[in-house]
Length: 166
Image (cartoon, rainbow, N blue to C red; front, side):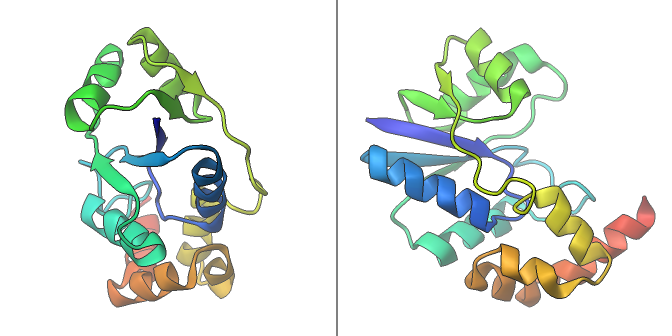
């Protein structure tokens, strides 16, 4: 059975990696759904869809299926249809995001929650804030290959500049 793990992954962090490990122990096939794929180079979405895909490839190799889904431009009731259009078929979606749960349930897609692994520690928002303030401790919260990739693309400086804009 294929299941989907939905998130923005801005950036991919160790909490996400632990959820993926949990899912791969329980299911044969895990699909990563990268949401807000049309967003990038903003304060809340500093990394492009391509950069986020690269973070997954460097962390997990090519053993995970990945698809990207753009935002609907405000038409929330269409998001489930977007998922079905942009991604290969799956049986169950996993997300702890209430918007995702409501939007996919509205579209008739079963949504289950996954465990949160040290949520206070592993938070994309927290990691971006650490980057913005020059706190290098963010490196301990992402896979080493992701930290190296963020360095390659100038990600920390990008985040710092985006936070300056407000």
